[in-house]
Amino acid sequence: MITDAKKWAAFEKEEIRAHKPDFHRNIRLAEAMYRQAAALGAFPPKDPLEGIEVDIRIARVVNGVPPRS
Image 1 (cartoon, rainbow, N blue to C red):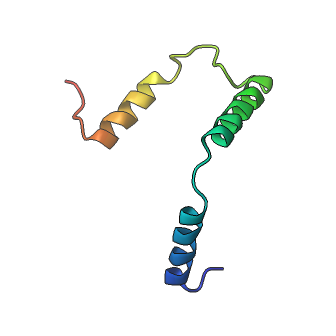
Image 2 (image 1 turned 90 degrees about the vertical axis):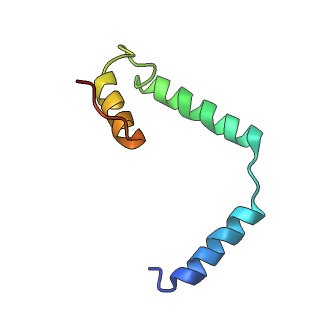
Image 3 (image 1 turned 45 degrees about the horizontal axis):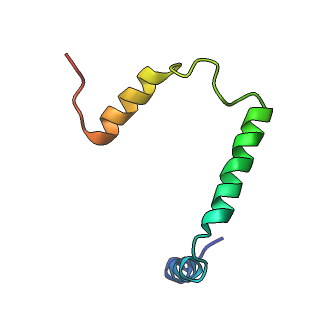
């Protein structure tokens, strides 16, 4: 359990500073996650537009766009 939030924030900041992003490692991770999702049958979706209405509604709320009348 975290008892000292300032100490934890300093630790996180130092970790981020000490470990710079590794582009090639990140690409390998993304490819591995894609292969895993494909092996599980979760990706690519059978109907790419399934649930698009929900995505649009969420995007409007997040971006502060009023709904169409």
